[in-house]
Each structure stands twice: as structure tokens, then as C-alpha cells.
Amino acid sequence: MLAAASHRATPAHIIRRRVLRTPIALALTAAALSVVVPDAAVATAPVPCSNAGGGHFNCGFYPRAGAPVQAADGRTVGTLHRGTNWVICQRVGGRVTSGPYYNNNWAWTLADNNRWGWVNAVWGQGGANNGPFGGVPVCGGAQGNPPGAAGPTPPPPAVPPPSTIPAAWSNGPVNAPAWRPSKRNHSSISCGARSIPADLRPESVSRGWTARTQAIVTVIRGPQFGWTNVGGAANGTQTGHISGSYHYCGRGIDAFAPGVRAGTRATGAGLRASWRLANWAAHNAPALRVSQVIFYDLIWTADGGGWRRYTNDGGSGNTRQHRDHVHLSVY
Image 1 (cartoon, one colour):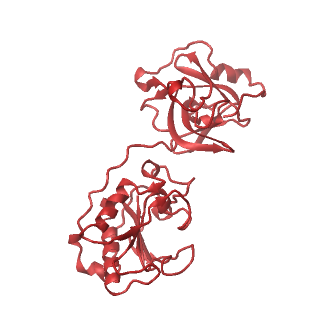
Image 2 (cartoon, helix red, strand yellow; image 1 turned 90 degrees about the horizontal axis):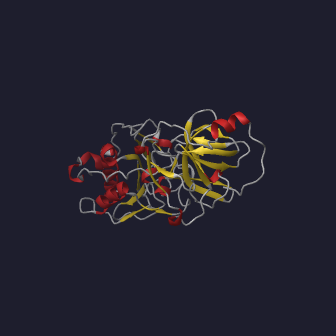
């Protein structure tokens, strides 16, 4: 997304393949494309592009090493040579940053190695931060999502009633069956600013809780548990918890049982209430979409199933070791 500059001549055979100056036949259906993004509705200057005919739009790209072309999961599948290349359509996805420049607009294109993928407008010549590809239509569903694109928000869970909790669940950890929300190892998921996994991005927030997480919070605060000290919502920062914590994307819950003060080990009724909540969450994890439960030096994870020793990498103490509160991570 830099101003156009002089650059090395592009090999003629590449130009012939990539740049279209006259309309050509292309096997695209009208259903694959939507309407053109009106420049007047966009607050930031677009990357200059021109209609090359045949459903192609020529845009300039500046990286000497080539603009990366990526798959939906963020893998680089090829590059576009420096200079003019064609794209077909565009969609909003995840932000890409290059120095002071950033952009969340992606165009569907064919890389120089003949692999299809998405190229971000941050690599375009001209335009402003978050400026789209000028005059390029919005993609339909045929191309899928660009990296980091927001999909439909999953509905809140149908929360199992806590009234069915066995009495034994109040006495200590009770192993729950493992469940696998995906092939990913959910005990190592990171919600850092630049590392939120693709399958978590559609329902992640920088402030507050996601809808799924909020539904669980509502139950914990409701009459069946009656806990009032429930927090841990995202606050727009990446501090206050361990590196990459679920809290940073609105998926973490810290719940203190009635009568338990922060920094003090849970005992008596507070300890029993905490184990009741922790075991309820672990045993109902598939319905709640809970991937981690941490309490009193132990952790349960969806991909492991059993409780095991937990050591906080941010230091010791009753709060960091979760001896005073139950932590839930929501997938």
C-alpha cells in the first residue's frame, strides 16, 4: 500500500500471463460475484485498479520479493510479482500490517505459480490504510473466506442445568470424558493479538465476552449457582493474565465462589462450591464448548480429559494457581 514507484521490468512471459489489457473468456458465473464496492461509500482511499475485462481487474503491487498469496488458513501458497497483476473480487478479512501500513481487504487472485488464493491490499501500490481494491467487486461464496474473515457467530450454548449436579462433584476433581472440538490441541491455544487461531476468530472480541461465554456467565450468576463475583472479560489489552490468555479475546471466565476472597485459598463451603462449578463445566464441556477448566493447582482440558497438575507460567500465589477461583476457557 505504497505510492507507485519505479521498479525492475517484469519478464514479458509473466506480464502476458498476468496482465489483461483486453477482455478474455473466463469460466466464471455471475453467481460468483456480487456488486461493485462504491468508492464513495469507503472512507479511505482505495488501491487504484482498472477493469481489464473478462472479470479481471488490474492492480499494482510493490513488494520486490512478491506480494504473498494466502489460503484461508493463512498459509502462503504463492506470490504475485512486483508490478501489475489481476484480481477477480475482494472481501474483508483479517488485518495485515507492514510497518505503519495496515489493511483488512483481500482480493482473490491467481499467484505466479498458478495457485489460487488471497492477496491483501496492504501490498498494493497506492491507497490508504484499510482502503479496498478500487472498483473491484465483492466476492460471493465460491471463493470461501480470506484469512481471518468473520463467519457467522455461533449461537450461545444450551446450558445444562446445574440442578442435576451429583453431590460427589463438590468433593474434589472428578475426571470427565475428553472431547475434541477440532484437531487442534486446545491446551495450547493462544489468544494473543497476532496469534488467535483461525477457528476462534469468528467469535472473538477485544472487549467484553463472546455470546457463548456470556451465556455461561449468566448461568453462574443466576439462581442455580448464585455467584456474583464473576469476571475476566476482555478489556482491550493484552496484559493482566498469562501470555496468550483466553481472556484477551473474550473467551475466559474467572469465577469466585461466595465467601472466597481474591488471594485467599478457598476452604469449606467455598471450596465445595468451587469444585461443584469446575466439575459441572468439565462434564458438560461439549455442550458448553468449554476447552479448559482450572482450579486449585489442577487443570482439565478438552483434548486431555483428565485433571492434571497446573503450574502458572506467570508466577505462584493463590490467584495465579487458581486456588481462589475457577477459570473456564470457552472454545
